Length: 204
Image 1 (cartoon, rainbow, N blue to C red):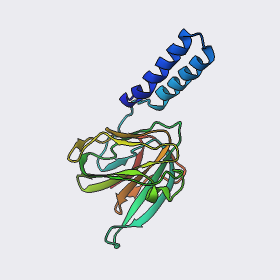
Image 2 (cartoon, rainbow, N blue to C red; image 1 turned 120 degrees about the horizontal axis):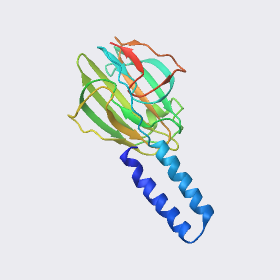
Image 3 (cartoon, helix red, strand yellow; image 1 turned 120 degrees about the vertical axis):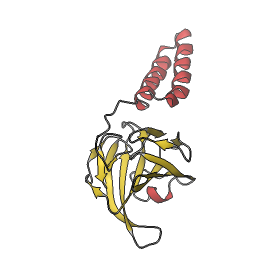
Image 4 (cartoon, helix red, strand yellow; image 1 turned 60 degrees about the horizontal axis):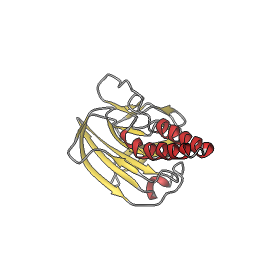
């Protein structure tokens, strides 16, 4: 279980204990069920990181809802956008898709539209992480949703990350966008289910 869970689990179990002390069984049971769900939500299952060179693994669990070409900042070179929707039952820990260095980090305030909406990628509150690897640069966007209103990154600029390493968390339903160079051979399709750290998105 991720450490972030304790700030929710401890108050819930403490409240359940107080209700139980006063023999208020139903409120105690409700709080215990909520505590159990929080433990489930913040689970951190072990993942087998694929072996091989030039692989890009998924940064999140969820469903591929969009694969598209998008213009680069200079408006000339295209890049690939792969969008992953996380429902409330998915693992919400985020992992680095490549080995490299966190070159840039930007927090962008915004709205809290439903994460399944394509417009959420542009207008919702999000963390934007740029990871520079050997021969590749990958951008990850941790995007808040209607329920998820907190995006967390545990790394700082200049941090070295391993492929599949835990880098952050989005709380309670969200979206993760991955921006890849146009030379990437995308190996997933819209509608595919992926697992963070173990599913291969593409090869460069």
